[in-house]
Length: 413
Image (tube, rainbow, N blue to C red; front, side, top):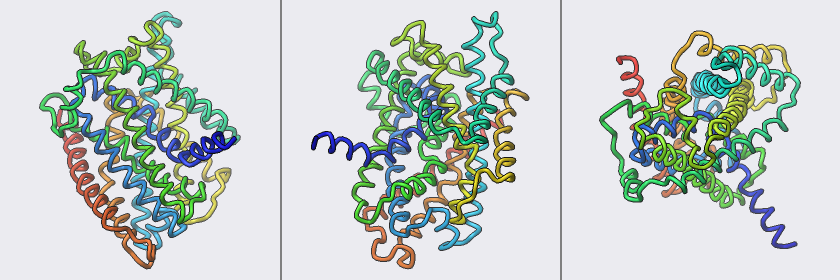
């Protein structure tokens, strides 16, 4: 009984970490890591490692601020820095959320079309049709408030896909020396490495995920005496994120890169699991990506009211007519690519690459608040956390430059 209680307590203590992993490992993460592995093998592993490493310290800093101040991150921005900072962060996060919905929907509908070609005489389900169905189901769940059980089921399906990547990695794992070389920071000369690197960092060090960390910590009810437990949870979350994401890169390197497949279309990604499940790879990948799409789009759809809750410290009802209309408008943004066309893979990566552009501001303000005695009192950050966040700030500036260069190259090509 004691051992069972210990296991139960341990799992409960890392529950917020599992939430973070589930939030990060979605359609955008899978797409970006597959593209990185297919185009550059293991050579960009350093970007994944550094983003996970620094994100762990960001999670610790955000959690510390939330626990000690007993206020959300955005409220602290508004109250203890300036309301304009909080408003800017909400606008920036909304832009990344809408871009993410566009990218996720475009990938999911493209995968569905390829998956259903054999059933529908080679044509497959039209992306507009599947987009309307996907977004309609999610909006219906939001309207009636019946989403929790459905999203938990989808999380399990995404977990199964992640486990399949881990098993496939064992089969096709690259040469250890190649993995080691991939930990040395360098930017490849061919292709579009800047936007891919920015996408890898953006999908891991994501502003929306970091702001949500504050809300999750408050809901968990952690107190000052739980700071040690919170640190363990943060390290666990980023370690697991790195393992799963690195497995996806390795699988793509071992299945696509060796064949010279560049991955411009969703169909090319769907063969990554063939070494493990053979002919069922397309179906397993499609079900996993579709589940990830449902579970990733929903929080992005409802993020605006949720951000306002954090900013104002008021409980805003999602059933209010004005918010139902706003959520509908946000959901409709997912129809843009299926209706007007575009390259789903490129759009998905670009949507993830937006996040690094706003990270320096978030990190800079967080550093300021963690050292403001009026906000955090005697629990201000020590030299180690300050040093770690200072280096993270420098890394975020470097990545924002990489992201800007990536978008500039995309526009000029």
